[in-house]
Image (cartoon, rainbow, N blue to C red):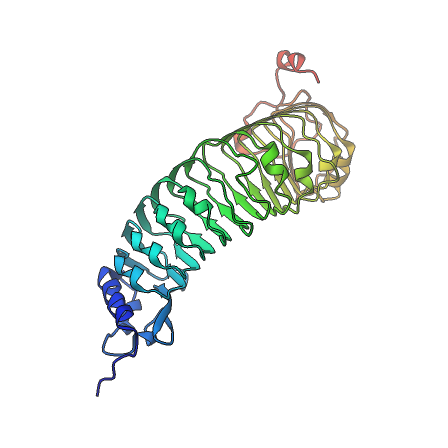
Length: 378
């Protein structure tokens, strides 16, 4: 005798439509349990509360397992109690259905590493309970709707590795902790009010953002990860940024200028300021950084003695100072640089007293031409 589910009929029909629009990729048998002659609340990835579907996690979540293909059916909007919706990496394509915006209880939406295309529906701004939105590694284009920035409960917004353009919207949520927009085509500048001080993780790398970041960054004293690399940011960076609880600071390949003046000893393990136009002397307060990239800038003067002490004690693992205008370093030519440490000094206004392996892309020239050094005496 067949026993039919007590599931709400609307939810039952919605699951049938969703199933018809999606298929297992070769090697996947996720939908094997989806036999509509039995209770859908026992299907893989379906979780119910009473007679309503509250969570739908489509595909085998085990890493490396094949995913699904097909489209997200508009019937998803009929699952009125749905709080969580995710699809594992696979080959799901087509646009996000506008009907998702009907899911007033939705808190978690994650469809990452698929082939979702089109724009991000502005109507997602209707999901006032949404906390996590992860649409990373897809084919999304167009702008980030301003309505996304107004979501009051938003905690994680992950839209990296798409084709998104336009500017970074203003975010009103005071609980936003993770914002990952790297590898897109974003333009414009960061205003002090666009990023909430609750942010702990911020990645805007590999975009076309420009302008000053000084005032915007000054407010973000909860950051533990910051990556603004490969943009067109200009101006100086605030010295107090080095006091934030950051473990990884990536500001390389921009157009930053001015001196770099930490307000205290820097305890950030990795700091990358390479390929900018920073100038002035290197602060001895950087000598406590384990991996320090200051190469391809306009730093002048001597390398502080504290760097030498830390380097010989194997406290510094990477110290890249090549392609600057540095005039000396007080290190004994017979000193043994620990094997665990990498030091590169080439193409400065000195003959490096010690020769250590430099990155291949540093070129073969050991010293900078005297004519350039005379022009840039600091």
